[in-house]
Image 1 (cartoon, one colour):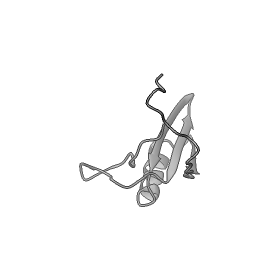
Image 2 (cartoon, rainbow, N blue to C red; image 1 turned 90 degrees about the vertical axis):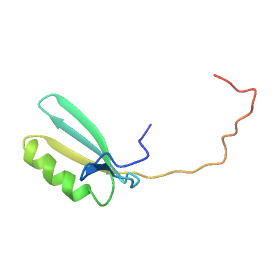
Image 3 (tube, rainbow, N blue to C red; image 1 turned 45 degrees about the vertical axis):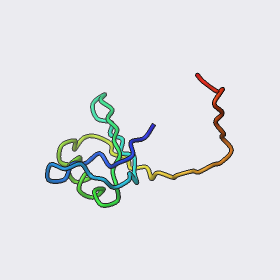
Image 4 (cartoon, rainbow, N blue to C red; image 1 turned 135 degrees about the vertical axis):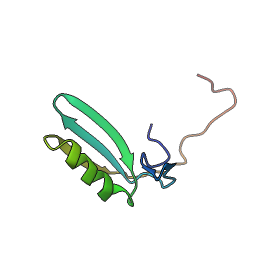
Length: 78
């Protein structure tokens, strides 16, 4: 499940933009992940490079898929 909004806080406020990229960082056996919007991609890339210079950064573009083939019935419960 991907969050609805960008993971960045700007001036103490949560960013309300939808995510456009999944960020994954692998550095010294540590793996981190987050999502970022188009507006904050460059900012977060710069911050990550400064803090994790030896890590591998990957930005994967999100592709939204819509479908109407899934229907929900009142009797369907998990």
